[in-house]
Amino acid sequence: MRSHFEMNATLQFSGEITTEAQAALKKLIEDSNRVHFWKGVPKGVTDPAEIGQITGIPQFGKNSVDLSFSSGPYTRVHDALFRFRKQVAPVMGRHRLGLRGIEVNGYRITVSGDFPEGFHSPRLPFIRESSLEDGTLTLVLDVSESDLENKIPDRLVRLVEEKVQAATYGGKGEHWDLVFESGKKPRYSDADPTAEMVKRGWIKHSSARGQWIHGPQSVQLFRAFEKIVLDEIIGPMGFSEMIFPKLVPWDVWKRSGHAKGVYPEIYYVCTPKTRDPSFWEDIGDYFKVTGEVWVEEIKKRIDGPIGGLCYAQCPPFWPFLQGETLANDCLPARIFDRSGTSHRYESGGIHGIERVDEFHRIEVLWLGTAEQTVQIADDLHEAYRHVFEDILELEWRCARVTPWFMAQEGMIDTGEPGQECGCGARIGTMDYEAFLPYSSNWLEFQNVSINGDKYPKGFSVKIQSGADCWSGCSGIGLERWTAAFLAQKGLDIENWPSGVAEIVGELNELFKFL
Ligand code: ATP
Ligand code: ZN
Ligand code: MG
Image (cartoon, rainbow, N blue to C red):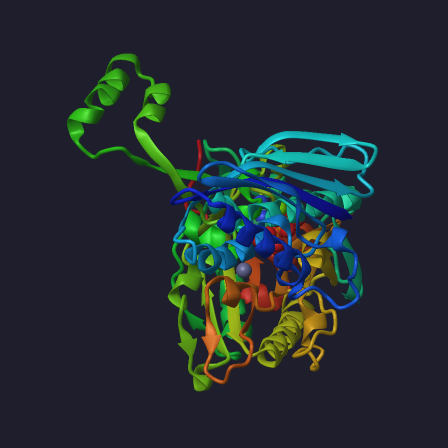
């Protein structure tokens, strides 16, 4: 993709621009076009059309001058403007003129390249007009000087490139490379485990969407899995328990990157405008009189959303380390959280207990140098393998998946310096999947991700030695483990592998319904 930038800006000065001052400014424009704007441009680039230039003749007003800028990808027009601004102060100072302000009168970006079918331009407040014709996207912007300081045009170009890539990848979603596949294991069921659990009264649907009430029997199995994870993985590998918050404010998702696109699946959280009871009195009265909750009116009396309920479990941990430098000898740090639910709006996708809006996970998280982070992922993989092979006796497989956005965010190794260890090639996710005999599908029941420096960078975490800080995480979905296990082994304990059956013990049949 090739991008081209054009901008008109007015520079306001503190007094009248005399003929001598005009001459000095023209001289500065020439010097800038010939020298200053070329600084930092790669050697091979020689065409001035690629570089920021002040084009045309400056239009002088009494106290102001109008300038036109154009550029290709190097020293983009706004960078050229700011470089010029820096030079203007001393030059015009000699004529007793100070720069009072800059007004951006017009800003146009054109991007040319292969736009896929169905591509549409971003819809954002800065974009006054946009059109796509003959492979050229034109964006006319409304931007202020401070928008330019915030690099809005650069980010828009990047966004357009990302959207083109996303549309090109289309449905492909992710690469999928098989890493391990277990052999066949004894199967004792070909029924949908959720339906079976409901039949035996182990679970009941609650009144919220995608939410179950787990009876004692179901919880016995959850806790058995937790115990196995604690005894076989978390304990021996030395993970320490922490409690991560479950209400996640925007600031955390801004830093974790989730703010880029998690919106369709968030459970949003709002706060009351005030906790003054008189402000809310009529809302309660309305219910007392009508038996209905006055939702339309409540919407007017709340602030936010201030964020959402836990989506991925690890982001709200990171403020614990934010801005810190970690001592070498506390690394690698290994922690886990199992303190609460995760929530996702799965919409029409909800299915059984395995795809729900409210679920339970043990989140395992570790950080350290790149080598330490990769090593722990490998150790974890071995521990999981032992659990699925020898204790749960599952039919499972695991595969390396690279979501396209990761590839595109440059998170995959490109052999950059500092990655001699080859660790960079390991960034990405391993999905663990179990076979569901009743549907002949594979269900992702957990994953292990090596996230590179994404979180430490986002939350400004450093290591004493100066080495890059990396992290990894693994979300163990208890609903998914349960669904996978019961789908293969059925609900009769006598068919379960002893390592699970012994921990569960006798099922607690607490309720009897008449
Ligand atoms: P899927 O592709 O199945 O939607 P995902 O890629 O959204 O899964 P991750 O974001 O990787 O899942 O979440 C990690 C783990 O959290 C999953 O392996 C699974 O165990 C659990 N999980 C995610 N979404 C749900 C859900 N809706 N219901 C139950 N468990 C879930
Ligand atoms: Zn995580
Ligand atoms: Mg999902």
